[in-house]
Image 1 (cartoon, one colour):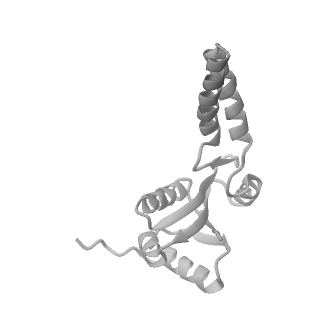
Image 2 (cartoon, one colour; image 1 turned 30 degrees about the vertical axis):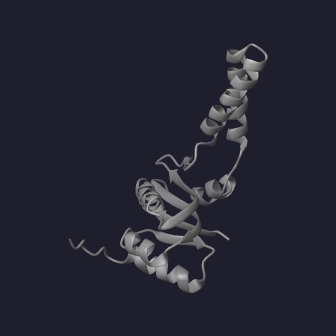
Length: 167
């Protein structure tokens, strides 16, 4: 079962910075992210979601391939590719994977302008190493599916001062 963690930041850029750290940790097999979305509330109060996966682009690529293949069978590969790509892009754009978009927009809208919120769905992690990397990154834990003890530990790590790298 995946765990949801929502962390709010006082500026528009910090959530993206932390998500980049998490994606690097994922490449190092320290964490397995199901989804990681950054919601930014700009100075005018508009909320914009920055998804981890671009489903419309992936759908267009997949649809284009299958459309071209079917088009080859019917002697019209370019038409098949165009129809397949557009159908794939539409189906990808309409697909919602991971965290519910309406939930994220509604929660992010409740924060003040010029802030960002990081929504993370974690399949599994190596907690001690992930927490060591996140130490001192700031933010306020807003919502989680963690136990109270785990949530308190996460908030303490985020709020702690960053230790200098030993090298």
